[in-house]
Length: 340
Image (cartoon, rainbow, N blue to C red):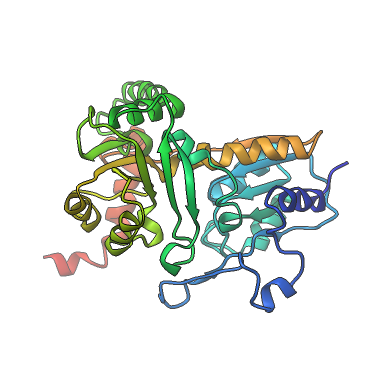
C-alpha cells in the first residue's frame, strides 16, 4: 500500500532533496526553493512551498494526477475519477486554485491530497532544450540575480540546421497536427467558425530571420521570468558564439524590446512552445518518474484545453436565451438608467 507520505518521499527523491521536510524549512528562511512571489499587489503574494500542500500523510494513494495548474476543474475531475492526490507543477493558493473557496473545504470534500513543486522541479532535466533542438552547455536558474529567471545556452543537435528545422521538430513532438485536426472537427460540430485554441494560435514562429537561416548556438530564454534586454546584451557578450535567441513557455510580440535588442545584436529570434504545452514538456516526464517510483499506483495526466469563442456562437440555443435573460433581467436593470 502506498500513502501520501510515499508520494512525498518520491518527490523528494526525484528532486534531489528539494521538498519541504518540516515547518522549519519555511520559517528559517534558508530553504532555497521556498520563495516569496510578489508583484506588490496587496494580498496577492504567495510563498512557494514545494512538497505536500494539504493532506493526511497516512492516507492511502492508489491514483495520482499530474497537473500543470490545479483548478476547480482539476479537483472535480479528481473527485469523479478516484484520484487520491494531485501533483501540481505551479504553486497552489487559497481560492485561486480551488474555485474561489478555501482549499481545505474543496479538497476534503473529495478526500484529495495536493502537492506542488514549481521552482524545485525546474532545472532537473534538459527536456525543454532537447525538444527545441539543442543540447545545453550552460544552465542558470536565477540569471542576473533574479529568482526563477532561467537561462539555457546550447548547441544544436545534428538534425537541426535551420530555424525552420526547429519549428518542424516542435510540430512533430507536440502533435500540433492533431490539435489542428481536433479544432477543425470541433468547429464543424459546434458550427463555430470563431473557435480558437491556445496551442494552435500560439505555435512557434520566426520573428527575426528566415526558415533557411542557419543555427548553431542558441540562447534560450523565458520572457515571463523577468528576462530583460540588458540580460540579453549581457549573455550575448558572455557567449559571442550565439547566433539565435529562442523564447519559449512565454512569448513576446511585435515591437517588444527583446526583439529590437536581438536585431541590434544581429542574432535570429524565434518563438518556441507556449506555456500551455508545459504539461507535455515538464508534466509528462514527472508523471513517468512517479510511475517508476510508485509501483502499483496509477498515474494520469490532467491536461487543460483553453478555447475562445464569440458569444454569438457559444452554447446551445437554450443557453444563449438563458444568458440574455439573466443579463437583461438582473445584471443590467441597475445600470439601465445610466445608459439612457
